[in-house]
Length: 324
Image 1: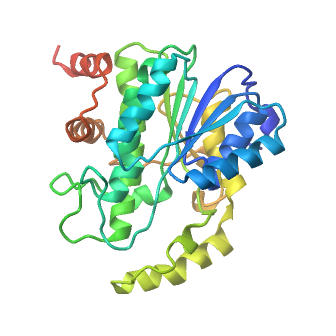
Image 2: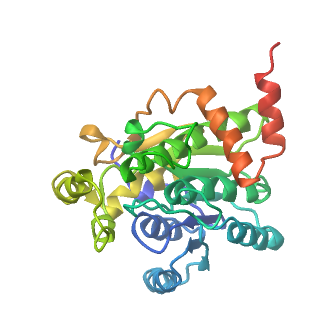
């Protein structure tokens, strides 16, 4: 398909929340949704960057309803407080874009709650946030939850015996697992919405190879293994030769959030060679990503780790899976 921003739905009056909205893919997504008339809230742990992003977005979109709120997905207490504030305000949430994520650090680190940092921020933080915002999503007429994965999910595996990668930690292995987890979550959320007969659409998207600040974020970190040096060489070359801008990389995410014809449980990415760049199109998910048993097992583990359950969605899924 030939992508066009003008072909997106008109979003006047609809409310959108984008995590990691201070820069990169999140910023580009926020800009387009605002231009289509959405009331946009960007959330980011980088307060200074968020304030500057808000200034730029408002300058580029005079009259648009855009706001910023600090959120650190590495802290469950802060996620709960953030969500509680929004739920108390009571405004329906039409679009939630679970975009925030990190690839560094090269050494293993943990969140405030003891989760491996990438798994905690990229996946568990969004699992908790979505569940806590579910009341607002279900008050919207046609809610969508878009969760950002990656083509790297195909090299990922969910290490149920070591979800926090406390043994044999490798930064790329950790990242691949989180992006597989994001895709599993998006597909499992749709199964649970279907079982509960809810009209919420859960959709996954990936940006292909997008030129963001990722290579720069690795600077100053201690290289601990040969592969760290190898990635230093390969990553900038891949982004330069095979990648696309953040603006174009955000298009599958925007498509999932606002295009007509998008289906719940869908997965969208670039349509070019290897899904590295191009216009939005259905993407290929790995066999593990599509396995309902893996999705259900990861969901149960995520509820246990975060303490966030999805109420009627969980009960409906259990009933749907029961023998007849």
